Image (cartoon, rainbow, N blue to C red; front, top):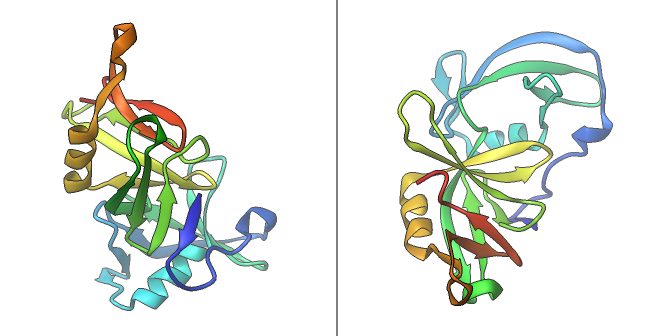
Length: 178
């Protein structure tokens, strides 16, 4: 489940297929900073507006989309960053609620899976959370360490040694990424 802390939330960009209008000198840096023409965008409301019309296409490219135009932007890693996590409940009845850098709250569940990939260059874990419509949030280091602290065997009583996390009624294995 995705909830906005305030505001109206993302636009229905999945319904829009406007013509491509070109590239915009905009970048979402790995740390979640939005940069336009080499300068960070400081106004949070403007970043939230841009994030609400962000779309990833089938070609893996990122676009800002309105009903009448779309422009391509660059994304270094994931377009969002999970900056915080609340834990509600325990064990298989646990919910992990992440807060992103744009104020969205996302509960890890079947529709919003946690994935721990491995960076092929460094071998370091690359933890991500699916936010919406193919858009992911990189889980920042502090939150990732908290996830690792919560890790437990899926079912120790049955001898299942796969380590992971429960949230939203789903078990997310962490063994592959740590």
